[in-house]
Length: 548
Ligand code: C2O
Ligand code: CU
Ligand code: CU
Image (cartoon, rainbow, N blue to C red; front, side, top):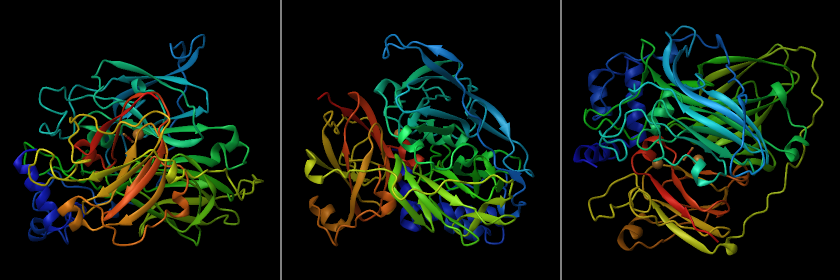
C-alpha cells in the first residue's frame, strides 16, 4: 500500500468515518444547495469530484418503468463431465458482453456489462441434486470503462485490464469451479464450471470475482440470481411461478450523460476508495420501477448486490413482510418483520400478502425513500395457499462440537510490523501463506474480532454456517495484550439470523462468532469481507480445506 492511500484511509477515518465521508460526498454532488465548495472540501477531503455532473435521482419521475424480470437461463445443450461418469449434464452458456440499457425512462442509455447482455443477468434455476454445467464466456471489450487502481494487489499494470471469473455465491462446489479470484480469464476466453446443486433450496447469486477489480466488474453489471429448488420446499405450497420473483437491489451513481460513475480518490495513481455508495437505488436494474401484482401472496427473493450500501426495507400502507428464508434457505418458521435489513451479499426471501388491497398502491422503501411501487389489480386468480407455521427443522450446531475456535481479526496491524492499516484479515495480506486450514468434515468456530469502526459483512465460500453470538469487547485491552476482555454479555442472533447463513454482519466493537461444519471437496477457497472495496484491497484471504 502506498503512502498516499494509507493517508487517504486515515484521512477518511479520522475526519468523518469512511461511510459518512462517502455519504456526504454524495449529498454534495447530488444536491447543489448543500454542495457549495466549502462543504465539499470539508466533507470529502480526498474524494475527487466527478467530471460530468451526476443525476440527482430525486428529480426523476417515480414509478414510470415496469420492474424488469431477468430472463430465465436456458440450457444450450448437454455435455459429459468427468465428475459425473456416464451422465449427460445440461450445459448453460453465459456470455459476458457490453451493452446499453436505460436505468430509467428519462435517462440516456447507460453502458453496462452483463451476463447474457442483461443487468441483472439471466436467472439460473436449478434443482437439488441435479448437477449442471455453465460455460462462462468473456466476450467483453479489452479496455475497462471504470477506474482500475494498479497499486492494488492483483491489478498491477502488467495484468490485462479486463479479466473475469465467476463465483456462485452460496454454492457448495469443488474448488476448480468456485471462481478462485486468481483464476481469471480475458476476453475471447471461456471456462466451464460444474455445479452439483447438492444443497438445500435457497436464493444464491452469481457475480464476478476477479482479483483486484471485483468491485468494478460487479458495479459494471456482472451479477445475477441463481435459485435452487427442492422437494421439501416445494411441498410447502409457498407462492410460486409468477408470484415468486427475484428482487436484486444495488445502487449506482449515474452521470447526466447516462454513464455509470464510480468514485475515485484525488490521487490519479491510486484511485481506490474505501466505500462506494450510490444514490440511485436500482431494483432489478431499474430506478423507481413499478410492478402490477394481484391481491394475493407473493414471494420476493431480496438480494443485496450493492458494493457497500446496506438496505433497510419496509412497506407502506401498513403492510409488513413475513421472512421465510435467509442466505442458505428456509428459516425454521416464518418471521413477521416490519423491516428487513440486508448487508451486501445477504439475502432474505419474504412473503408479502396483498389480499384485500385491490386498486391500492404499496411502496417498498429503503429507509425513508420509496424505491419501488406495487400496484394491486385483481385479475380473478385466487390464492389458495396458507402460510405453514413451520418451514423446516434446523438443528443448531453445538459450540461444544467444534474442534477449533479460530480468533480472527478484521482490520489489524500490518504483520510486517508497519503502521496500522485497515482492510486486513487476521493481520495478513492476501498473499501471505494460508493460515485457515480446517479439516474436511470437522466443525469449527470462527470468532471474528472487529477492530475497525465499521460493520463488515463477512462471507465464507463453500460452507453454510450458523451465527452463535455477538459480544462486545475492549479494544484497548486487545491492542495492549491481544487478549479478549468482554465488556458485556453475548447477544444471541435474532430469529431472522437463526437459519443457515453464508454472510454475516460483523459489527464494530464486537466479536462475531459463527460455527460451520466444513464439508465439501478439499482444496483452496476464500473468505472475505463483502464490501467490495474492502475485498479488493486485502480484506480477503484464501483458506484451505484439508482432506479428512
Ligand atoms: Cu459473493 Cu466471494 O463472494
Ligand atoms: Cu461466495
Ligand atoms: Cu469490510
